[in-house]
Length: 100
Figure 1 (cartoon, rainbow, N blue to C red):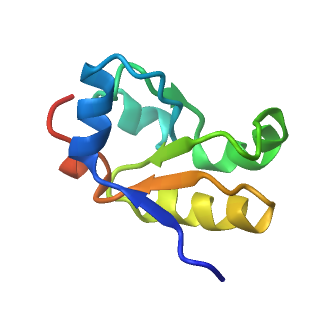
Figure 2: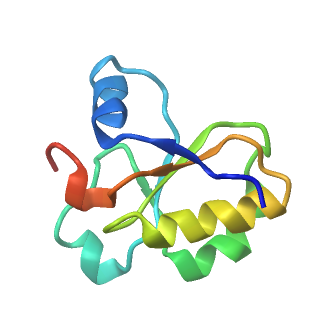
């Protein structure tokens, strides 16, 4: 399996501060989201991704986020197998994000 692309949390924050259009999907649970999320992120719990990925463009950059980066990595791996070429895992997840 090819290596999943990674993006650093600080890079995500910088791109958002520059008002770049960035598609971020937060795959954490509803309970985890209550603790805060990146405002621009769309919340789609991990178990719902499989029902939703057909809605997305396989060439579009999509950044996946979770608490520590493990679940979002798994999502990226599955989507890569499904033909997505520009999915990125935010390394370290929300634990590493500069500010929520």
